[in-house]
Amino acid sequence: MYYQRNGVSFPPPISRDRVIWEFPKCYTSEACLHQRSDWDIQTASSCEARATRQPWDRQKMSKVVVVGDLNVGKTCLINRFCKDVFDRDYKATIGVDFEIERFEITGVPFSLQIWDTAGQEKFKCIASAYYRGAQVIVSVFDMADIKSLEHTRQWLTEALRENEPGSCFIFLVGTKSDLLPSEERQRTEKDALRMAADVNAEFWTVSAKTGENVNDFFFRVAALAFENCIRKDMEDGVPLSIGQRSSITESDRVVLAETEMKDMKRNCC
Image 1 (spheres, one colour):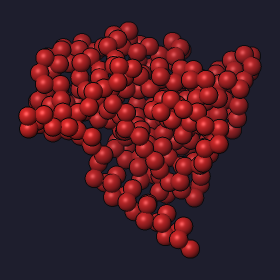
Image 2 (cartoon, one colour):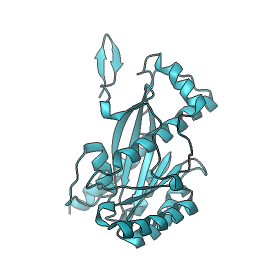
Image 3 (spheres, rainbow, N blue to C red):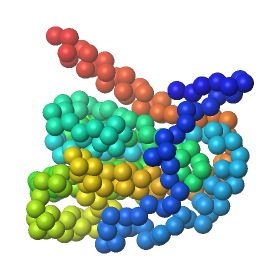
Image 4 (cartoon, rainbow, N blue to C red):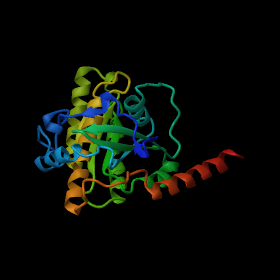
């Protein structure tokens, strides 16, 4: 929701806990695909120049798609970060849902569209329509269910099929780490690291219940997506100051509306 002042539109203030200045670290060095401790030089210089202008000139936004089996904790993970809540008795996602989370990164406003897709087989045809245009794909598995780890490869294949080759950052995320004793957790992490290497993904372990690594993970996602967005603008010759802001794509709106209509028809009888 934007507000007006002297005829100019301004976004609401960004929460202090969504301000990122330092480049976020990875979970472990073995799982890190981007071995850097600081921002890309070109990105840093571009942001420094842009931050001296009106910071509300253009709201940059990247699309994050979260996929995985039913009950692996996708919705809990998103809710822990976006709403700081954990609900044991949440209802399974029907089709898709999304959250928009706003950041300030090195002085520049930036947002993530975080799309929560259903893990049920009957909703796959609906959810797959939302994979298109993703900058980040997060494949989630349950640390206490090794089969869900094996299924991550198929989820990634389906999501990547809807996007241009090499256009997406890929993350493999193990949830419910609080349920495993130390030795079992270490064994599962080793299996996940091998899977992550096979699919060219960065691996993270998190717990939506305790909040372990949740903020660090999403900050890492936001930082890498932001850098990619800035670099793409520079490559495409997009000027730094544009009097518009990005939003949910029109194709996403159309598919979301169609999905809601189908749900209404299904529930009315």
